[in-house]
Image (cartoon, rainbow, N blue to C red; front, side, top):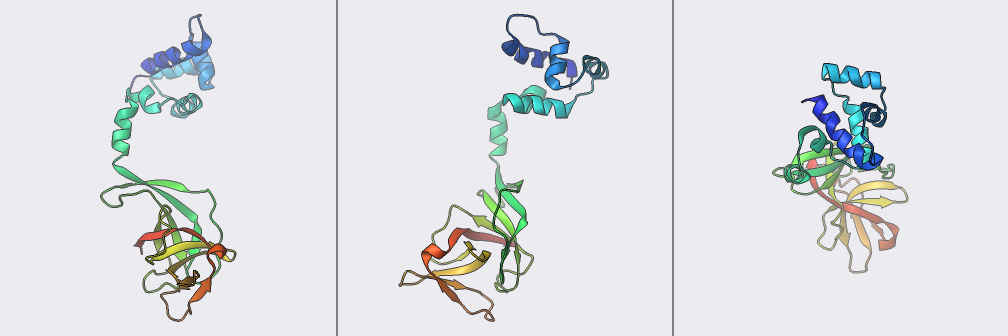
Amino acid sequence: MNFEKIVEKIKDILSMEIGDRKVLNKDVAKALGITPENLAMLKKRNKIPYEEIAYFCAKRKISINWLLFDQEIEDISQNTSKFSIIRYFKDINASAGGGAINFDENYETVYIDKRLIDKNLDAIHVIGDSMEPTIKEGSIIFIDRNDKNIQNGGIFVINTPSGVFVKRLNLKTSGEIEIISDNRLYPPQSAKADEIEIIGKVVKVFS
């Protein structure tokens, strides 16, 4: 990878911002947030300032793959389409026996081969034993947030005033929702439809 060629590409990008005058090395240095002396040293050593280039691309919504490797967006998207995107909420627990904190937007993105998981899902931990033996404490559950249909039953993650829970749900003829724990030590409960928020259906469990 040649930093000199990358600098020339950056100059082409900056020429559309600066206008008619010639783009100089000092303009590249300023755009990258480094000194002209530092830029000259990096060029001499062919050392690429990846972090500065990443911010440069992000600010202008440019693909860093194109700038560094001449990869077109279409080529990148074809490879990315081979993976499912998992949003992993490592700090969020769904309780299988007691109250838990609510969802927030702090998550890590994990890419998994579609041959293993063929859809985009959310992943969280389970605490408590009320869903044993189906879901053991400490398991990671994968949630399809596009599937909230409880008419055919299944295990769902629900949000309640008491916290986030993972439970088996059954829609009763009265319109109420029966909340069931697989562990028979925990009796079933009922709630009105407007008393709970269905986050999504549990589609996979990793113990």
